[in-house]
Image (cartoon, rainbow, N blue to C red; front, side, top):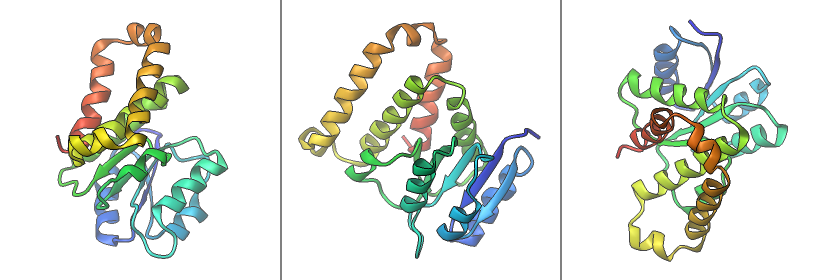
Length: 191
């Protein structure tokens, strides 16, 4: 078992409990069954937060905002049934995964990808986050609609700019390592 700490946040108790059972043999896992409980539990000890978006009272969006405003250094995977729309571009998550997750191996891959991201420079983390947003939108929204959306076009331009500024760093990254990150993002999107 690793020393990584995971917080699973979902108001559907059977889902939260299932995810925790799948992960507890590899990580230290805590569960919050609603957004308010999650906010109360937040601190710097978590490496990954798996966060449902659609919860009553305190939404996953609000929990995510709290994580970023408080400066907690953790990766956040939005694991939700909420279909992504262009609003996800402005959100501060690291990966957006649309439920269902039906196999433990899927959840392990998501968590491992998020943990790996913590080891990269902030610029590479930013590129992977933006690329995850691109993959999320491309998996769920028609290309013609993407082509017409100004925010999406700005996202693509930002990715190109960041890739250009990181070209030396990316060249130094093992191709298999970078490819593994992109595949993890695509697999999580069900492509």
